[in-house]
Amino acid sequence: MSLTDWIVLGSTLLAIVAYGVWKSGSSKNIDQYLGNRSLPWYHVGLSVMATQASAITFLSAPGQAYSDGMRFVQFYFGLPLAMIVLCITFVPIFHKLKVYTAYEFLEQRFDLKTRALTSILFLIQRGLSTAITIYAPAIILSGILHINTTYTTLFIGGLVLFYTVYGGAKAVSYTQLLQMSIIFTGMFAAGVLVVMLLPQNVGFTKAIKLAGNLGRMNVIDWKFDPDNRYNIWSGIIGGFFLQLSYFGTDQSQVGRYLTGSSVGQSRLGLIMNGLIKVPMQFLILLLGVLVFSFYQFNRPPVFFNNYEVEQVKKSQYAPQFNQLEKQYNDAFELKREKTESLVKAFDSKDAKQITAAKANLKVAEAQTDTLRKSAISIIKKNSGNDNVNDTNYVFLTFVTHYLPRGLIGLLIAIIFLASMGSTASGLNALASTTVVDIYKRILKPGESDHSYVTASRLATVFWGLVCIGMALYASKIGNLLEAVNQLGSYIYGTILGVFIVAFYLKRIKGTPVFIAAVITEILICIMGYYNAVAYLWLNAIGCIGVIIIAWVLNKFIKPGAVVSGSS
Image (cartoon, rainbow, N blue to C red; front, side):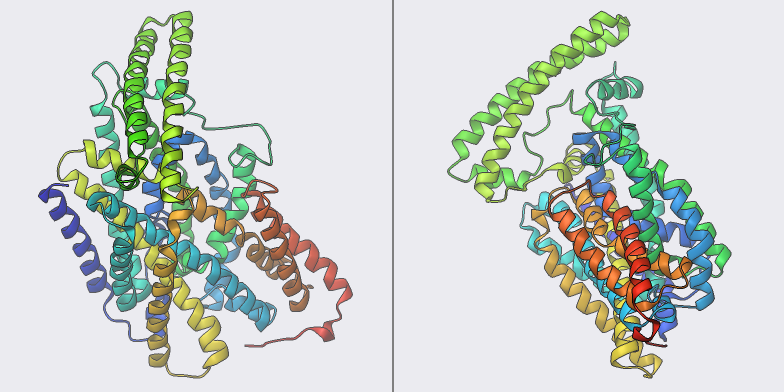
């Protein structure tokens, strides 16, 4: 990067941190630190979106579309329906009870052990997910500076930890408002520039048409297949359960809309998220498709992770890899000619000519794909990691190689900001759940507000260090966008099932639902380990499993057997 880009990157990051600390002030009590209910609906909506739209979204989603097309957008089709259910059911209950965490309600409805179980499940899932969001921007600095991700992970984790510890939930919400504004501007500018960088005879329409002919505009798949990760059915049904659990029971999200000044403000914030999130995700994926079309005319690297490429070129495999890279470059020149022929065929509007040109391009593409796979196999041998994947580096490579000075720094700052926002929300949620559901309720009840604020800050530091430690191992999990949602699907369904029973099945007591949750979670982990079904379906199976097992057990367990933990 140029000096201009470094100045833009550094000043943007410093400005965001300073703004959040200044606007939030120092939190004097636990209500201010964990979720002061004073923010308007647009703050709530943008904060909710920023929590979900981490660096993973802006780093991995374009790469996901580049390699797999638009079908991932179906993952979000259940979101609007989930927002409606949340507004009707979850939001008024949480506001009425004036809870800090979603799990406080479960003790009031069931007992202490059920509250503790769901809190622990959340802490496990959110801890792993937050670690991944810390690792995402470490990839960026590693690629730019050509250094190990260990150092960049420590830097990003430390920066986020500082302003999260200082300001709490309010600092997170204020910084996210500014972050989302910058993110929308920067991503829009990147999309415009991709189109401008295409050849003169290839505009937006032809770029989309070209991508469609190469299988990247696969927006909707109507075929029902439980083993297919992304189709209309897994998106609407499995995605609905995942989104309902994520926004309704995950403290990182519940904590965001509990900062709303009223039930109405929280509802409007969630509705805003439901209306904007799907189009936003569609456009981010479309940006990846445009980058794919761009790389049909401009030679992409044989492997987008330049750090791994540099390592293999220093190894014993260097001669073999260099030869494959040369063959790949030559094969791409032929592929580019076939791409240009297909574009000319579009102008002719001759169906036979288009079909023939498309077939020729497919043959050329198969050749480059074969050479790329051979190169990747060498990289895997050299690194000793069978999960080496470069989809997380596709958009980053495009940004750093082709965008003008200044904008490179801004777009990289955007990805950093997204990571900082979602990581801060995750750490704040982990701290609030640890303090409110475990420390305050079980270990140290009846302490002063000052004591709990101190405990919250210490809990934030603790979880920050834990997540940074786990982030150091995140390189082994492949595409970050899929990984974070797959981890969530192992746990979210079970937690959602507990809440559904709490809200709607009033006769079921604490012990049956506790046992049902434990049994279901074990079954879900087994199914996930053996890939029994596509991961989105685990959310629906987990939720329904808890409901059915709890209903059956409730008929056999006598009320006197319930161990109640009143609050």
